[in-house]
Length: 209
Image (cartoon, rainbow, N blue to C red):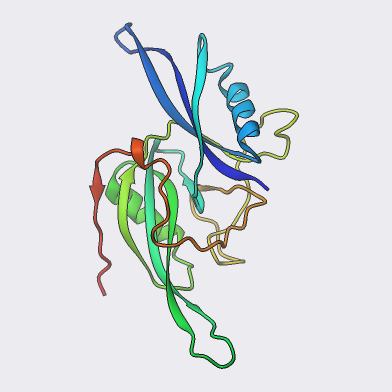
């Protein structure tokens, strides 16, 4: 089963002004295990980063879906919440359960990220809210490919919008980690594994009735 992993890489980067600086950058990729994630990041970045680089951290990251738009290269982490009714047993009344899920979307601004998530999840069969949108430090995303063990091919995995089996695809590409259950329900207190490096920029939204 494939999952999303955030891999931190440290290397010496040449800046635009010609100077060199030691940096630590996070990348998001699909892999089966921590070991596979480490092996894949070395394969992916081997031809991109000049000189030596070291993996300084790997964490499993709970991302429901990723909406990639070709016209933007800044990633925003969007949290949505909604209520799901859990069926009662032996005739008991169903109880509402609050669910939180995280998405990544490439956009030009917080407002643009908000609009794109609303558009991408427009076919959701539940009413949802967007309590927070923050800039993600993710530099690049390497989605799942069918030939991970043989060669790296950066093509998007075909998937559909969350919870809708026959939903029309959004204008952007959608990346998932195939093999994982895309309908998993994460608790509101979901651990945000890249929170430590997230930008302090955070905008609150409340949906208008």
